[in-house]
Length: 115
Length: 113
Image 1 (cartoon, one colour):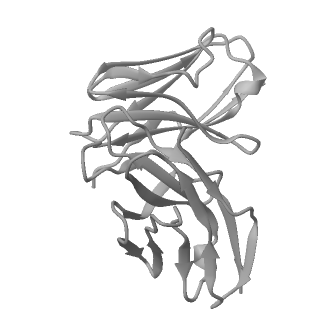
Image 2 (cartoon, chains in turn yellow, brown; image 1 turned 90 degrees about the horizontal axis):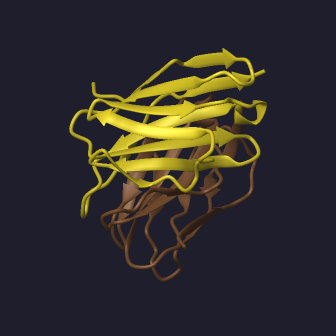
Image 3 (tube, chains in turn green, yellow; image 1 turned 180 degrees about the vertical axis):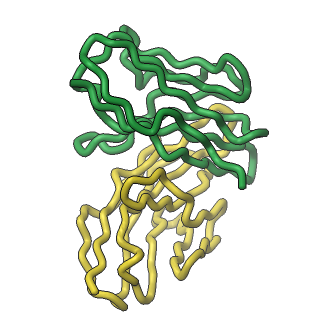
């Protein structure tokens, strides 16, 4: 049963520390999304990749966030330095975006708490 | 830009009641439309989708019809169960290369026994 895998599921860190979240997309999918979910803002798109190339990262604070896809089986989202306002659930999703048939499959998320 | 609007929640219903969650969208061209569901502590799961006008998506007793004339994709279920309690997100994607999913704010549904 193919699924998107995110690690870690939970992360508690101190303000100023670096945080790296990882995502293994479903094999064969050409698009990877990173979303952040908070009670106040709902689901916010941070960045997405198509065929490993970054297409849009306008939702990310550039000074502290970075997203990469070093290979087709791994996407990373890094925060350095982390701040308490970064506390949220971060979701990775992958999909096969093509004409006439598109879906996105979500991982279970990484719950980040910055204290 | 593209956008999705959903009815404000939370929605509280008794078991076996009829459910409607309204969703309207703004997009150029011909987007595909989706309903996702998020159970507590979980990621979003695709509930149903429709890729062209007048298509009806259905799954687990839920239905939604793609209405281009009213730019709507309302979610309905004839008889809700306690296990349907979750947050429901309406979403769209334009079927063009380079587009991403646009989600509505979500509607929390609570079903009481």
